[in-house]
Image (tube, rainbow, N blue to C red):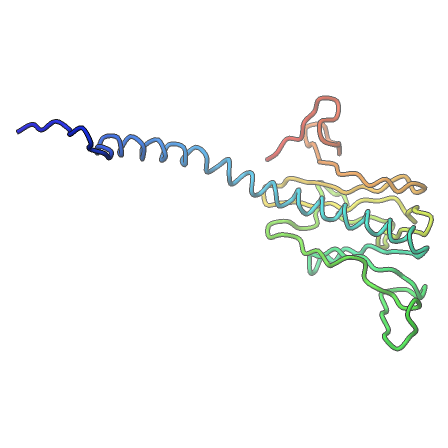
Length: 196
């Protein structure tokens, strides 16, 4: 017995449902690797941007409060943080018993690198290099030593936060281009960043 659909009948046939599920399956199959790549890439980009922002905040704090501000990179804990060196002694020394304005204080918050991202550099380069010291911003906005901090992800992509020249302490994000053997900004000379 063959019944025609009634005038008010609603719903989907089994064939329509199978076709929709097949289309969804194909989209997920081809879209998943791209999504994974995007997630891995976003972690190293986030670490680099947040580090650059901490360094910009440190420089601004140094100028605003006429104090030396140091940005430290801890490869053991995979953290980045900054502090104002108010008392002028080596190292971070917050001492609550001293009068306010004479005590070192943290600038911003401590940033923890995301999973899968660490400090690292390609081929014999140094991951953290500011002349053996933390990145140190002076009250005039300059930096004591030009340098860079570099990050690597699980796919061996490398990004860098570079600070130079000393006088203006320009903070720039660069990516390692293995084929050209150099660090370069995004889309420099029509060379977009390539990802592993």
